[in-house]
Image 1 (cartoon, one colour):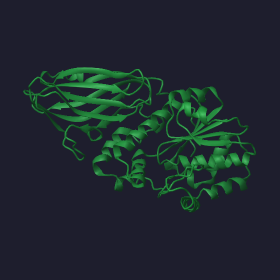
Image 2 (cartoon, one colour; image 1 turned 180 degrees about the vertical axis):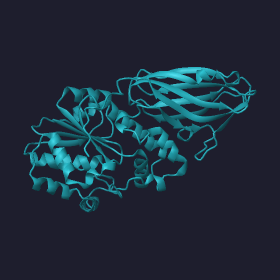
Image 3 (cartoon, one colour; image 1 turned 135 degrees about the horizontal axis):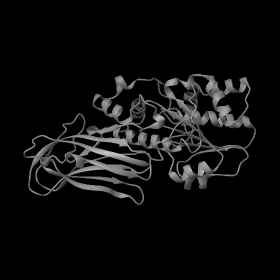
Image 4 (spheres, helix red, strand yellow; image 1 turned 45 degrees about the vertical axis):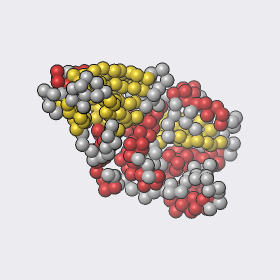
Length: 372
């Protein structure tokens, strides 16, 4: 059986991965474990065993999902408030907020695609599953492994933060300096954080608090992200003048042809979407003509839509674009260009609003039984 340990970054997926490895060691049969996110790598890493194939990942490609659906597979999925995930990644790796948000959208898109393909056991960070030995019992039951109370307690005790920190320090002192994580457990320096929930309210830079809330809708179920309307706001994009948050949302067209705004390189589940460019002319009498387009990095897609919009003529209905996203690992790029017609003008850019029109990546999550 394949046990997929997939989760958002900083959601406890490595903890789950090592609990599954420990349970498999009690199973009495040969199991193997490895990190893998693509079908081609799975084929390279896999071996024939009579126990478990334990795979750790943060996203999976379409071919891997198809492979999992055809084999005896289950997934343990960890989620966490995306805003807390961002804080943890910033503090552990000095990552950029936009990059972390893009990674989170890729993970959530993968999770959404998995839901009705294989049996899923979800674990929410906010429910504190890592503080309760019952979580070990639930995972073992999900895997079909019978453990004694003593076995469950032993595994749980070995996964306490102070024990993990001690183990990390030991392997850090005895490995090549170029190897920044343990290849077996995938623990790495600074891996164990404070475990706090809601820390984003004090520790997330203020300009991005609303941005991340609107992008991920964390108060709704992340297993159906983004089943409702979301907003990738202006803070998530890149600009011709290299502005950074907190940024002015006013954009000036000088009559020359130029790409003014591009990004955010986030991901969406496969399906049909309406993307609305939130552009407001600041002076309707001198509002410029802009070109908008949507690109996808997925194979066989590239340019999805391109059109010109005369803001002075109030052609705002043209700012709404319907697209089909074929691959959840495609990066979506929205761009706004000025035209070379010699006319200058100003507008305000507030980002893009995204609404689902249905598709195979937005399914009923009824198969997932939430562990309290």
